[in-house]
Image (cartoon, rainbow, N blue to C red; front, top):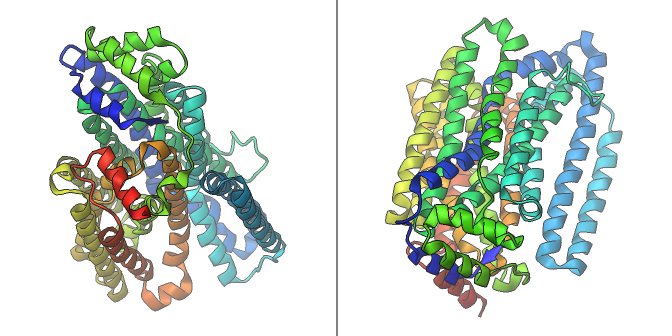
Length: 554
């Protein structure tokens, strides 16, 4: 949905002095629970990763379990093929919107044909029974299992735009809360709740994909709800706290994982403890679901559906009796859907949006968030110590995210992003050398923390600020292609890290340092990308930003 820039300008002049700030804050806090669950659900696997591998996956290397190994690898390959088809179909839908039906259909058809040829060969390939080959499958299945929620994130993110228009922002968030709850319960006991005819590990994967759909929906609908319910003069500040809620959700689950891990020994953690880590998500998701029953739909959506009386009621609570009718008229006069081609402002703005999303993931942040405990165990830490160190990482992430929120309008977008990219690059390269030379003491932990701080003050929150600013209102829906690219890049990084980090040949040659050097190179490239291609948007109106793209197209 796109609004004229005059709408935001005129709304910003309508004060909120006569509105109800407590009511506005209450609605915002409910919506940010979607962001909190986003962080909670994506990071919960951090504490359970080792247990899942030991319980379901590692035993395929034992010759005595050859039948199980063949079965798990066969089902893995089938699910991988299905996942690739889902992702390619989503990408194809975005290509159709970007290039139109004629060109888009041709490119999409080519992608599907190439994928089908690959899938046929992939599924027909014989499963090798050698020890090295089976160890490779352990790494692949592990990466797929840990990152499986991201497949759902791609699906949910792609569906979010349609759902928000068809049934509303609030109802979309209700679906998100239900998906979180179903996932938490199903992942808790994938054996007894296996209705899919798969091995338990892939029943777990399916429930994680359901949770990922909830994450994908919340990643778009929570900030959208806040933006549409908040008065313009406080909208930016309120929306920015959604990013804080995501990081806060991650920090909460780090503590929850530690508390659960300390309730039993390692054997208990492998068989039972990890289950309660996932089941704990029922508490915030249930609270989110209940609270959503008491919040209204956004005024803009209500006007879209012709429910002006309800919209006026909500506006009176938000902006006061005097201003509400004026704002309602402005919404009616200016709220409309636009359907001009996504390339109306040229390809550069689309390219920048996609690459901002891709670099945000390719610098390796979700490797740290999802695999932090694994990384610290590779440094020689015990399970308990690795979880405490993970909490330290989460705390640094939270603190520096708040720092970014309060400095992005003061220092500008480009300086923060360039400094952050360089900081991440130096930290990752140094961390890689720490592994390579076996120097895994306090220095390695410091490199991990400086990397996290560099990301949190730059590419974490500021990427979303730029994405919300660079797309002109008339092609604002093109932001969905950047969101889809972000989740796909996240999936690639999370899936491939175990293959890079635990590969026998790479480990023998680089001692676990190789993957971190790749992410370090990405940090350098991200800084160069910002320096050369991304315009500074600090202090510019939407009209001025649009003129940047118009000038570049001349």
